[in-house]
Image (cartoon, helix red, strand yellow):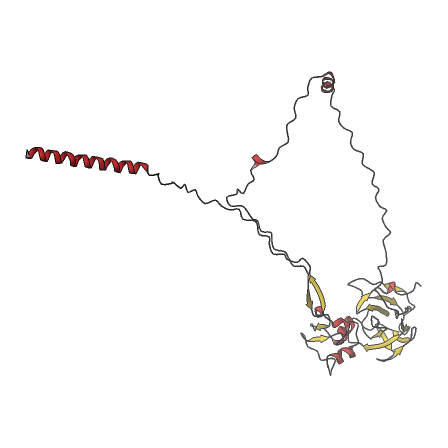
Length: 328
């Protein structure tokens, strides 16, 4: 009886456990599975190219104080007279502008003013210098190939065969004709202009000098750029040397090598004339002279023969006197 009691309880317990297990399994089967999230690698977002900052191409003015044109640095062999001549000035003016008590005492490396202070030439000059633009910035999409994809390029369609017809057959059997060479209009060369013997004269104002020949002798040497700075006129010692135009004598000297006894006459702000190799000088510095006035006598000072060396200078630079003197 006891054994039957225990057997019955064990069966009840087993049944209870089996029902609990079935209930647990059914509960698990009714729940939905957790969602699966597929994560792909991050996609690169195309970045729009950034345009470089706008840079003005307009030239920017840089002020340079006259480029040093109003100052001259003394070199070896210079004298105040030669500096004055090369700059078309009176040595007296140079001495005054530079507070020189003795015109013969200048030093190599010394800077001299060759134009008056406050003149228009001393004003700063604006020099335009273009500003270089930065190189363009090349932008490329992430992952883009350096070489273009030729497969995406458009190509011309290939020509197909002609459909059969009597006309097309005759066309194919006919030999190809070479198109005649295109006739080009005949281009005639422009006639060569006659070479100009005399270059344009330097600009002058209303007070341009009226020039005359300074001596009557034969012309024996012409003006040569960089070599002979004027004309050489033959003559006998003692023959007259005449002022080629009205003006003021600014220098009587023998201090320039190769000139001998010479005279310089200043005619206006731009022009002066030089008379060299004289045997005798008849005028003084600061003296006013008239056109055609006798100012010296031909000689051979610092020369191998009696002659007059005559120069015309524009703003201190030698120019060809034949472009100013009247025809003989």
